[in-house]
Length: 237
Image 1: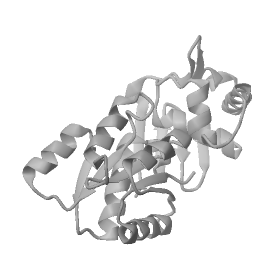
Image 2: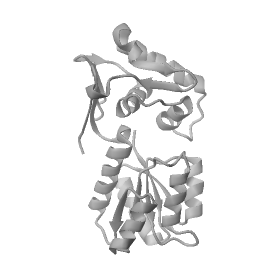
Image 3: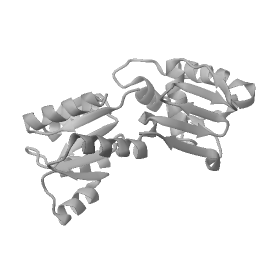
Image 4: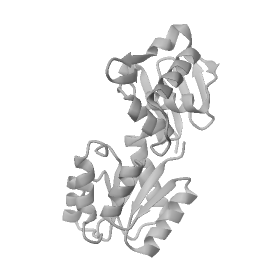
């Protein structure tokens, strides 16, 4: 499951360079030259992370970040502001507006990717590489292997992504629509009951002793119900 990035930059040359940099790092890239176009992209598909230039035509990147933070759908979206403004007050304003990080121009491609990956590890760990474990379950993203009490568990691709999302956010309730968006993708049409089918398959794979770790929340959705102290997240860059 490759992460996606929304690049909001009005300078064509810089935007093309950022797109090339992210594509080389195995990101799916959505590009926008204005805040208005960025909002259109976000309405169509929710990216994993957004990289936003401060100086945009008509509506500034700062105002765009504030708008994204006010919308419940994008309130948790990891946001990196990039700008030539390197003053302390500008940094404060950018972070106060809701940016998770602030990167000043010029910057190297490797630093950009490192900053974005750090945001993903903090805010969207289901896209990060490495291992996730909770209770008896250990999932290795790199080898696509799952173990239950040290024994291998066979999962299809969709069930693997579902379990990874739950392990990345233990005890968080996901509605069926959220699961559809984050596992299947917003551009894919899948009926809600399809989620129930794949949840059932994950439970069957966990076996009778542990199938109840994924609980149904009435009127809500599903969650991985496990003591937080037994959850360990180990990530590898």
